[in-house]
Length: 462
Ligand SMILES: Nc1nc2c(ncn2[C@@H]2O[C@H](COP(=O)(O)OP(=O)(O)OP(=O)(O)O)[C@@H](O)[C@H]2O)c(=O)[nH]1
Ligand SMILES: [Mg+2]
Image (cartoon, rainbow, N blue to C red; front, side, top):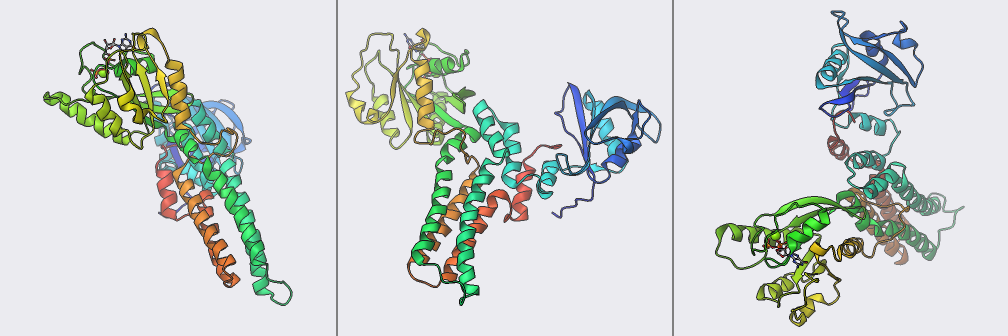
């Protein structure tokens, strides 16, 4: 798609539905002129005379018929100090779909064209106000499901990830410059020693590695995680699900096989946006409905980032329990030793292998026992081994992670080339590749179709 920054774009910027206020936003070289055609200020002054960053009361009207569409407030942000770096006019009207559509149509009839999804933010990027990682943070902020996700996204918008990428870039550029200088001016500039080149490359790689260590944590805050509650029938899976949700979402009865379908809900566990699925108890069954449920449980078990394995300690272990234990091999799992309010009649020795190295929490949802500890254990496990510095730059976007990994591979190639005594211009090729990969984060070296795909995810009007 060819960019056309000469168009003036317009869109409804607020969600569809009833609200106190709705906003139609315009951006582009003719935004002020178009607003001048359809806005009548109570003060009688023309829009063109308004100062930047001012708000004016008046009416939006159809210049063709003279008919008033709605009372509005007009906000003006002149280039370059606006969201898009262009002239931006926002018309705030009453928040109903009919006045909003009327005003949008007036803007279109008077010279604007409809904005594509994310086109305002794309212009902010193309005009250099945001880099690509910052523009991506805008959508992450809109979609944030917990305070912690919001914090990660706001930091990214503030440029934490870009700044780190820039620091790595500066180190690479410095090595590259010393190599290129010695190639271009062999008489005046001595070749840098291979050991020195390798050392500088390692320093840059160290920074990239450090940035990558936060990836799992960042990803979980941004995308959330999936936790499947599994266990044999009647152990208390649905009771635990309800207790975590603090509502009676799933049906609980003393009849084994109560839950037959997957029940999914969203939860905020210590800032982690968690999707929790309650599943049908795993057992061999001749009931056709239940067996479909059991099949779905197996699928969830495979897809989950974390398994909450529930054991009923008031009953002896059954064959199903040992069967589930064997399915958990290699999976992240927390064990709930449930019904711990009742006398223990369970010998855990047969599943000891599956318990070793795993955190187990004694729970009893009806008595409210162990739930805080369970939440904490789940959060710890999801973020396990991750840096805890919450103010450090956190890479949360898979595109950034892939770019960093490619950068690291090229740096490693460069280091090996340098140490193997090959000509330095070969090192320089690897370093250039590292720079190209790194530039993808901020958008300097990204193909247009990727940029297009990123902004297509945005909502209209953003
Ligand atoms: N005493 C006691 N009873 C519990 C506890 N947890 C669950 N129960 C009871 O155990 C029975 C089964 O609970 P559910 O939560 O429906 O168990 P489930 O694992 O979802 O069962 P299915 O959906 O059939 O697989 C119900 O009668 C619950 O009230 C507990 O910690 N202590
Ligand atoms: Mg159930």
